[in-house]
Length: 322
Image 1 (cartoon, rainbow, N blue to C red):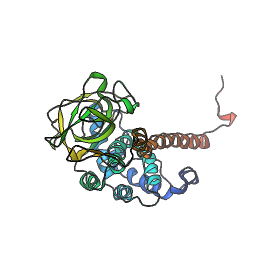
Image 2: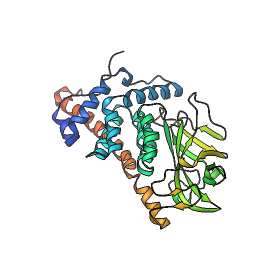
Image 3: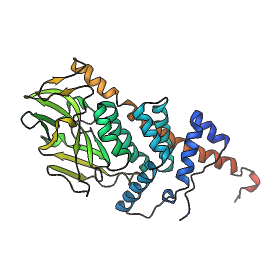
């Protein structure tokens, strides 16, 4: 199979649209354009499209350039946020579904660990994620609450005797909905009300196992396929439900709030509203990635339009009249 044609080239148009990160973007375009996986396909079933997208994600995240970008995020090197955003922009030009899936696994799930977890979480979870030993999903949105995270109903109740959290979906409105990578992911970053002795400390993020290494769901976890997503058939959105799923106390991402072995809640931010705002603010770069993906699509459309207008003939003698 021949390489994909992403319209690459060292043109003044590319340099103008790419701005200061032209070199990084052009390097990534060359790597993706040289891979036959990125040739456009229009003859695939839903399952085949999802499989191809997952293969594209695996190839993309195995590139040294992408591994370096993830490590930059961990180490918070200079311009690491901007570099990550422009990488997402290029991925959306090559294939929007691949860009979305990479964003879910590495910038939403991985970003939650980096932004909301402590050093131990980064060590435990990010290294194997970078090595593609597992994949993750980001489970915030609920059927009855959308983006109103403050009132989500999924519960994480602390069991003092077992030193575990019990994750529950208490009602239909609490189902996690439109969760990307739901049909493939091994773990989920789940936002839930942290409950100790019947009292909620507000929404917190927990790492919850969904599937084992063989792809089988763990007991208590239900995943419902939402099937076709218009324009993004390679993205597997699903609904998640939890029925008394137990996770270790350490699976709470505890940068802004932790629970000790004695069951006491501790936070560097005492005000609950301020703590909630700090948690969401930490995820802002991941949300910005969506706008950069849209911008990548706009730039691609603009490039096509300018090239066509430059090459099209507008001589009245070439226009057939009747």
